[in-house]
Image 1 (tube, protein in one colour):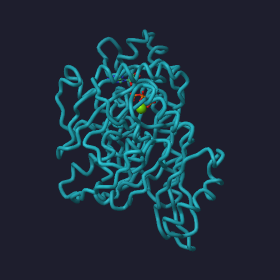
Image 2 (spheres, rainbow, N blue to C red; image 1 turned 90 degrees about the horizontal axis):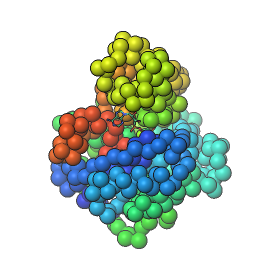
Image 3 (cartoon, rainbow, N blue to C red; image 1 turned 135 degrees about the vertical axis):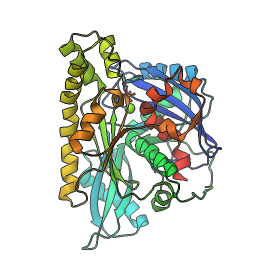
Image 4 (cartoon, rainbow, N blue to C red; image 1 turned 180 degrees about the vertical axis):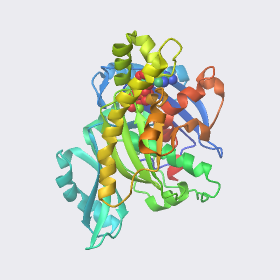
Length: 394
Ligand SMILES: Nc1ncnc2c1ncn2[C@@H]1O[C@H](COP(=O)(O)OP(=O)(O)OP(=O)(O)O)[C@@H](O)[C@H]1O
Ligand SMILES: [Mg+2]
């Protein structure tokens, strides 16, 4: 949906530069089912990226190079993503007008909604409802700080790669969800290939952040119109990104200040564990610990996610859009926290699942190490969504 990919790629490298783990994944997009051809990850020390902002460029560049070298990633275009406070996603109402006119007017509108100087941001939007009465329409506005986008692209370049797309991480996550939903649905519409004109000179600095291809077309093509409100919860290293979507339309996106690190801290404190053991517990290794206590801690820290979600849900309720969410999809390293999925599922009384992007792809299991594909899959929603950028948006 967003991105500035103008050419049709036969393959794409997704680089998810998470605050704890950098993931590099290359997809061959020429087959019916995309094929993972390369994959590797590298850890980042916690001080390297804080709240989506790069604090130590050298550390991040090293981690990108480490992952890329381990994976044997070829010198090909890269899709990557930004996240955090410098990205704002907001629903706004404005006078009804054509999309082309809205593209002009949006800068004036955005001034009221974005706490940054309008000259410093890159904007895109999606019309959510063309007519909400009183000659008004509803849009989803996405704004990102230009220097952050350019800085991110520069980081990829300095690591020796060519950045082609800089996306927003929560939208990459959504991209994966849509891809999986469309591929599980045998009735899904057949996607017509669109071959767009290519300007080989296209570079990140000259292009708009967001692609303006016809959104409705790509939605029809890729999502089952289930009408379900799905809460995509990405429990990452330091934050949980909440991204609520229905039929390909994002309704809400928000970061909650709870991540795997907070659970690990509580395991250490309350169970007297070393960092390494606590880290293992977070990944579901419960051999040497009291499982009941672990589950209690997960529920207690997890309640911050539950409570943090409440404002998003009240917003959906008061705006008359939904009674609540219909499904939870848990991704990120936190998807493995023992009992978290069950706790959220019970709390909201809705079905919940762990995201499994590898289920929609072909791959040689050896790429992920012995039996690790299943364990790693929920951590790969953003990198897969990035590498699929072209396949989903076509
Ligand atoms: N199989 C795994 N491999 C590595 N880390 C794991 C695994 N399972 C759980 N984890 C935990 O998840 C954390 C990383 O999660 P994730 O990759 O989603 O974070 P991130 O993308 O780096 O962070 P953020 O999205 O907040 O920027 C690790 O710090 C670790 O504690
Ligand atoms: Mg992440």
